[in-house]
Structures are given as structure tokens and as C-alpha cells.
Length: 379
Image (cartoon, rainbow, N blue to C red; front, side, top):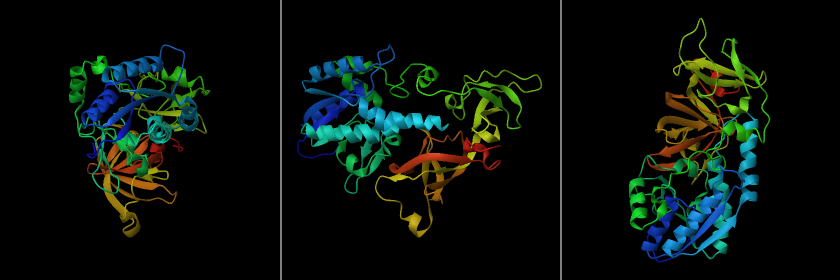
């Protein structure tokens, strides 16, 4: 958390333990703190926790003695995040809407609204850090199990420069301890998991409300039919559960995994065994990347540069070589093959603890079959 004179800070108060302790840390530092709770999704069913979260936010702010404002961003969310989520699934990809939510909502319309409330800065409960000095640098959170820089890589440097992450140098256990010491009932509240607007509801049931899946064949790379699928949009690369494929009389007993999708034939390509070559990729292509500061100079002077990449959240850093691709995106070559690299997810680049930026994964390839791992190309 940046030192300095007291400021008017608007905390994104979710109703969970992380945002509550973020507020506590700012109050301790002498800032003028107010909270703003966002409603981004409304569903009148047992899966939507928006009403409960608002009640928890009110209780937290009452206990801490700070004002709570409430704003409804559901229209913004549906237009700026959910519409793209559906579009990506309709293309057979697996999107990550939490990345867009940060860019468009939490560090977009929320930031603007906070300024209207008189806030000089905003603060969130993200486990990430802002580096000292200029230019603005996004760093990993100290708690490696909770680091959320991956989800923040699309946020602009301008927005990050107006934000504080009070939990960036803390461990999750310390956060819960502080909440408990302050008598907050949310000290042991379960962390939210998965996509915010889906929650714990059955994913297939939810998606079928908005998109129509076309059933088809589940086939081996050789074209042998081994089962049925309910619609390509319901499956993601590397998926094992829910395939409904049993053992074959002349096959092994190894589990089945989704290796690719053939959209033209509406076929789900499945393979047996986690170590099947078609599940492993040696590189990927992104669409146009977002750099938090500037594009690495090596792309202009040396045509490529060395860094690390994550292709999913909580993945270990993967050493790689990055260069420009003729598509306008980036070509990334891994030092070691990676499992189930998935189009629609994000490739996020790091130099040590610094998050440089990243871009959506368009395709991946394997040394054994340059097109098999794309998720879409013919086999």
C-alpha cells in the first residue's frame, strides 16, 4: 500500500473478508475511507448471492463505522462482459469473464463512479501489488497461492495508478486473523470460486438458457465414434468429467479427455490418457496483446524476447520465447510442453514478479501435430 498523506479512498466492498480487511488497513493508515458495493448480476434463484453479499457489506461497514454506497452495474456487465462471454462460447472457445470484469467494471465504470463520490483513489481486496515509482508496474501478490495479477493484466496503467491493493503484501491467513480480531462475522466466509454470475449453479444448465447446443459425435483422432456430445460449447480442452464415455472392448482403461473440437463436422475429439500427445502443446498464438506499460523493447530491436507466461490462473510460470505473429498477435514458444492450452483463456506474461500484460489465446500447437492442439483445426 502506497504511503503518503491521508486521502479519500473508495473501497470496492464485496461483502467478503478480503475487501473488509482492505478497508481496515486503509483506516489504520489514516485515510478517509468509504465503501461502494456493486451489484453486477441479478437472478431470482437460490444460486445468486447478490442479496446476501449486500447484507454482509452493510454489516461490515456498520461494524467499521464507514459509509456504504451501493450501485447497480448489471446493464454495464451484460453489455461489456456477459455479451462477450456468450460470443466466445458460441465460437467454441472457453472465455475468462473475470478478466473482462476487472477491466470494464471494477477498473472502469466503478472507478468513474468512485470519482463522482469524491474518491481520490480506489482500493480492492485483490492479492496484487503496485510497484514503487513510475511508470506504473503491476506486481504479483506476496501470497503465491492467492496472487491475482493474472486477472488484472488487461487493466490500463492509468487505472492501476489510481488503485491501492492493501492485501498485496499479506498472506491470506493474516487477512482472516485481522478480520477475526475485529469481530467481523465474515472472517471465515468462504471465498467465491468460479465465474461470478454462475456461482455454484450447474454450468450446462445455465449456458443452455442463452445458447443452443447442437448434439454430435465424440470421436477419436482417427475418426472412430466412441460416444455423443451435447454441444461443443459445453466442453473445454482437457476436460475429463461429464464425457459419458466408457471403456472400449479393444481399448485401455485410461480415462478420456477432450483434445480438440472440429466445428465444421460438429465433432468432439477425445483421447485416452492424460499424457496423450494431442493434449500437450509446444506453443501458442495470441490475438492483439495488452501491455500494462509499453511493448517490450526487444520486440522491436531483437524480434523476440524471453520471459515467463501463464496460460491459466495459479499455473507455475513457464519460461518461453515471445515474438510477433503475422496475425498482429504474439507467437509464444514454451521451453517445455504444456497441457491443455485452451483458446479463449489468456496468456499472461511475467518478468520475475512483474506482470507485463497479455492477450487472449487464439490457438496452440504441438510438435507431434501442428494443428491438433488448436482446439478447432481439422485432424
